[in-house]
Length: 113
Length: 110
Image (cartoon, rainbow over all chains, first blue to last red; front, side):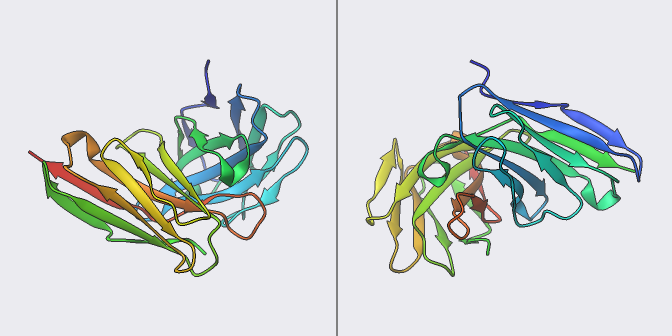
């Protein structure tokens, strides 16, 4: 049972380049989340989804887009990367939102130069 | 809208106790607690739902006071393995999301 898997684990981008981070879960969870983690800032919610085909903005959505075409996958896109988007990105999923525990992926370390 | 955690950091000797607090400016319906070790993903510790109940997990327990919009995490007889950053998480609005405080860094020394 893989749980939550993030791809890739590391990436270096040049300013202005685009990329997509993939999050896959095999637990049949309805809720999925994308967070970024910066020193001293904790985990900040970028976007989230409460079910297949739905997405919503979180605390820091600017510069990011997401899609949830399949229940098990949640994609995070950066259309034009900026150095301010250098961060560690975590994906998480849960069965019933805040009523159940969230399972986290291992993170993606993204550097934008 | 982030929940506020205190203290920001705490250093303990093995066997000492610690309390980490989490408060919100908005009504709380549930509180999550997670621990993250350096370079790893956060790991779930416990959820507290409305009702003010106290839950426990080994020597780590927590309380939730929804009237005061606060939760506290209690670590008793701390062990070296307790070191890490602790995050509380709450729902923002009522849309099913989960947001976290900035974390409390706990260091347990021999």
